[in-house]
Length: 274
Image (cartoon, rainbow, N blue to C red; front, side, top):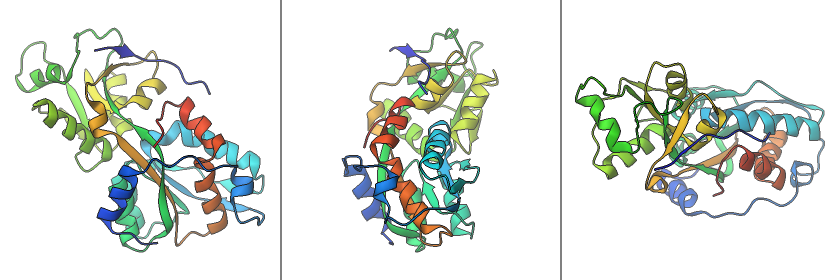
């Protein structure tokens, strides 16, 4: 196995149909930018975005670029959290213009409630890695090395995971099952940022996080690539929401994320293409 950690260059659809569409899609990025991809009307007003926690760095940059293209648009501070948490908030009445999820199923939950405008579109992919302390003091090389956490040995690593309902937790369970590894995590967090924070802060020896999180924490953690990680590859979809207060800007931003400019940003932050 290898370690790495490098810097950052700075509608309504049924659940099964949506998941199948996104998982099997290999859509190319939209041509043009949001300036030409929208309906041609001038864009303005406030734009509210809900996005998966793992998108924070990339979406902060995307929001800044979108505002530069459309000076009359004000992107409100983006709400980042676990995709399942954000989906629940939207279903329970929270208002937003755009939702970007780390998986198809949580966006499908929102679509099933009639809250999506048009069809969600995939825009990025991600895979899990094992985050460990700098220097990898416990010599963790693969998922099997984490199983000792359940054995209680003196050198057993303290492992944290995302909760199973969160996309990173679902992906982690898939990979652990494929590897035949059973472990008892010290905690199950509601988003991937919380897992990374515990490893980075020394509260845990290891955690399963996205490759992009490893890149964002260069020098603070190291990443151990997981053999067969593509078996649990996350495909990220984005959609404008039907109750959007700013539907024109919502559609334009969703298109911008998939435009060449958007792909450039996502590539820089280590995301794969769908």
